[in-house]
Length: 124
View 1 (tube, rainbow, N blue to C red):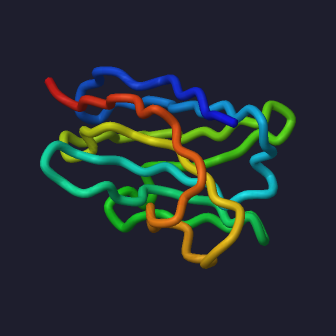
View 2 (view 1 turned 45 degrees about the vertical axis):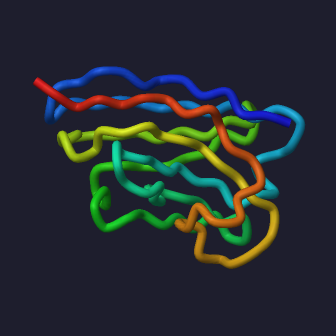
């Protein structure tokens, strides 16, 4: 049971990146799934997530309108499209999933599976 992440890198402010997270050993459609990030010296925080109940999405206020989470059930893969990136978006981004629990899916607490993380650096 694992995630394989890809898509991080260095981008200039205003640029875009797309992160991917392929799951194996379990079916994403049955889970709350989300993207989380951790900047140096800060706690891990929720960025965007999808509820397993109705596929509704939640976004952190800091990324609303710029980031979009999605899932491809046929590929068992989740994505995070990040547009208009800002230096404060810099950090290690992790995908994660949990089967049960609160419908509030932006908290990193209680996630069952985590990706290894991919570094996103937004800088000139």
